[in-house]
Image (cartoon, rainbow, N blue to C red; front, side, top):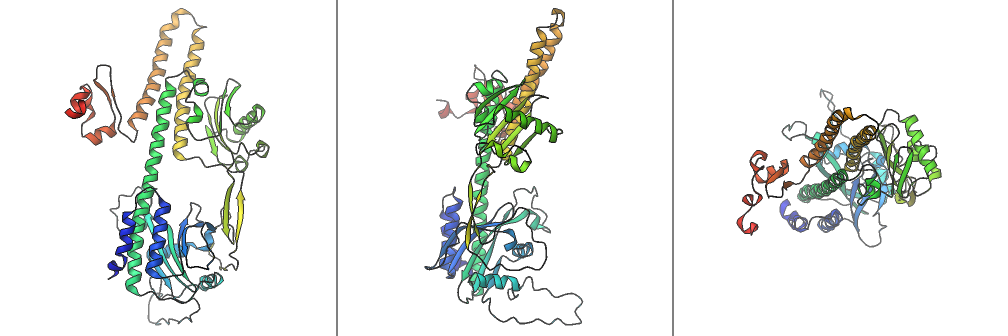
Length: 476
């Protein structure tokens, strides 16, 4: 019976084309709205800092919308999140109902817990919270997905929560008391599990897009290797600004600054270098979405054009910089702003009485630097270090006597081998299949991804004519 109740909604979710998490959430709240009959149904997503946001919503006429509102992490304490991981559906029929006390037998050797019980009374703080929101009844479904940061193989069933995380909630509110019978609650739990699977798929699709971006940056790195370093990365196209998304970039080489796009002035850039050397002397670089928060004294003087920065050291005096302008992100808070570092400290909780939305405009912060962007930057850092060594060798050659040329050729070969090794590493670790052929059509490159897809090992593919590896109709 429960499956029949959820069958239509599940069919709708499964028929959606991939590529839009927003469409998936909108469909989910619509189906739950029709299935349960609550006055309001929302999809509530947790952000990385644990604060939440209503990303999808449907209501009956006359209710104030919550769509787009953000709520501080303390609105849903860690204890409540832990219970959601254990009990996927939570129903409160009437927040004004009188509680019935459970008396424990004195002979019982352990404390009685109702954490897994549907009849468990809500915390008094949460009841007051609901009343302040003009919500008398609620039904909440936990959306639990795979934790992408965990490398567990799933074989250990004793600790499944280590490989799962609470992505968000599907929240239903009603302005009058409402009871949902067990078959319908079970149908909602089943529907939430199917929804979580599709959320997982959408997040995996986003990761695939990231991998494509990684391949693009790797291709750019290989192209930069073939050009005159270091000036080729600022004078030719594509240049270092094409490596990662940015508003400006600069190369500081031999006390001379070569800049592109929106960058600090030469004096300001030298101040940044002095600050990096003084406060980050043990680091080979720094990335931040806010120079102000990172502690740079002259951050406010940079204006709106320069806010975030990624910088890497090539040598003692040579640096690479990428800059991003500030993003004026408008965050609408549902009555209380989330403060960074604000956590549930276990003290007595007090529900807030105001849920009136207010606008918080966040400045002095840029888009954050993604991990794959920093990987590309660090790869370029390594390549340029080798290139700078080649330049130093070239300059030294003009000042040395003829008898040392043989030794210099050996050094040059070592540098070339280092650069070649970096190119091979980029190709071999690529997340897509890559092969190479020479002018005679013979295969001379075959990375692990194409070996995996074709089933043809590297040692068997190398040296074969490319046309012997493809279907006849394709060769024609």
